[in-house]
Length: 261
Ligand SMILES: Nc1ncnc2c1ncn2[C@@H]1O[C@H](COP(=O)(O)OP(=O)(O)O)[C@@H](O)[C@H]1O
Ligand SMILES: [Mg+2]
Image (tube, rainbow, N blue to C red):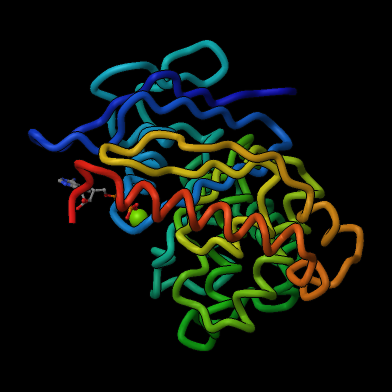
């Protein structure tokens, strides 16, 4: 089924400080939408709006045609600090949403093992979290998000704490998982290269308060999925030019009159 999260003319402020103003953003099934913006530009706030953790001060946030008034099982959220439960093994962490839902033990264990293998952690079910690397823990977090077969996955800088090599591996692993199920993805990052590589639709957030400064359709993710090595993709002159263009957007916004220091 084709589904859509839509933010329309959204404004958000904390106290008297406006953070977002007039933000339009669409995430449909099968789209990999990446929001890139400077630190403090309101990226996490945007994700929290889509997740239903906070309400907009103006405009509207909808899932299909209904206003989003809170979190929902069709929108899974993955955070940077993975928020896993250290007292549970890997399998039970992944199966946790199914336990909440009341699934039988054998069914949820089988589902967890299948999901672990889908994220490249075949056979890790009985491990403890402290036996895993940072990248593996992120895979566990991803598996736990995906196990309820969400229509949307909302990810807030999920790879920011990983070393460069692990991060690159996780980016490709995420694209592979997404290509199989074609969820709608809303992925937040301040890393322009990561944004360009993953996005089918790149949304540049800039200004004070932030608004959508540019939306760019991209196909680097599809090229990576088709087997083009990531380093070849990054070396493409068009990729380099796009990186400069996005950087300019972010810097222009920072330098514009009225921008906070
Ligand atoms: N709950 C909150 N209360 C007050 N200010 C907040 C809150 N959350 C975020 N902020 C502020 O709003 C701005 C945007 O934050 P955030 O959405 O986390 O940006 P980003 O994720 O792009 O770094 C920052 O200046 C931050 O300090
Ligand atoms: Mg943030």
